Image (tube, rainbow, N blue to C red):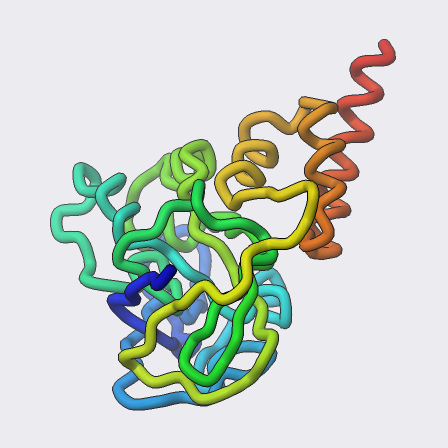
Length: 222
């Protein structure tokens, strides 16, 4: 399976004027790469992250589907051509229901693996002046996702994602399912227990789901 990429983008940290409530520094405004760029274990060499909640080995690349842009067509007068929510990879047609944690893709010379869900932040909400954007995106489960880098390499600006290895586990978990559990059904003991068996969860996600499970169990015991 090949997923066509509309854009591969990177950004530098800037002081942005989207928020009147608090200072806003971010690499949210990304530009297409024009040739090829080295992809390391922590992301493209010219891509920057403002704080620890973004980036790192488990969040080296962020992907969002251009198909999901349609969710915001009534809120934004002119939809951006790419990198609407600061993603590095803008896929033409991809559904979170079809992508599993642990799926591996060839990206030119590099190999990447689906590793994390994206937690929308206030900065994208402020940029587009949509007061409930974070809540709506989370509930929709159409948040995009992160990838870790299994093999470093150069990535050409015209590269696409080719599925080379499907998630290999008896407890498969799609990006959509994990989002739904995390945002909409985080008191469901059975679903939380099953999700925690997935071997591709990051340590961060594992801890968060464990907290939800403990809370749900405490509620059930009362």
